[in-house]
Length: 316
Image (cartoon, rainbow, N blue to C red; front, side, top):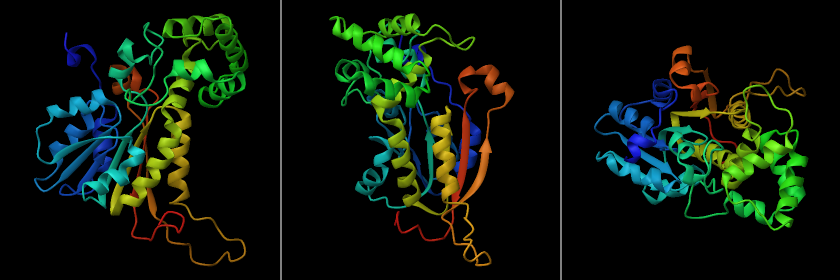
């Protein structure tokens, strides 16, 4: 069975994201999370012959999948989207008309046991989006102390039993049996966490936390949002799809910081400062999409448009 049949990916909020980001059909666009190309193909279908689309992904499997797109308007870059300004600059691109980010982990990554993202399958405890570099989840758990492990699970998984889980992980390691498999981690968490919300596996929050930490997802997001704002031309659009509150909160705060003026109480009647973004709102998946693709249920799409105001001094 080939990968396209075995590890399918259903793109979330496909039309809504493309509608949101496409400012002008003849423009230059960035799909910062190519994945399996659902958003990219939809964008290419609506771009004019003069348009251009640059896909970015740090997963080598996603980059390989991009080779199937034989369109002279399209190119792919193996990198994290936090590096988009430097990577686009190397291609001679210094301004774009839209940036689309579909955050989190893709279905092919989740559904492939060898990637180690899911507790539903036994596989190596890896969780790296870019398998060519960095520390795997197993490597992190093999060297971090109890305090650091607890902090990661608490901060990135919002797990109230983080301390107990970290203690159990370190105890197992010190007993000479460090974790190397996803099933081992799931079983350890299940023994440690005695209560959990109905319908949720006890390991859900721990797996999320380790994945976010290993891939530096929140740091990548913050750097990527800044890079996108610097690249966007006036009238250009930023569209970001988030799948959990830690991501969405940062996207919401970033857009608000650059689109909402704070009243200066020392000069309440002074004209508001010019702001770099204009928020175009939030979009949630409809009932039909959630029914067809349950992974869409937590998705939030936020869209903003670049104004012609200069960037804040801290970003320029």
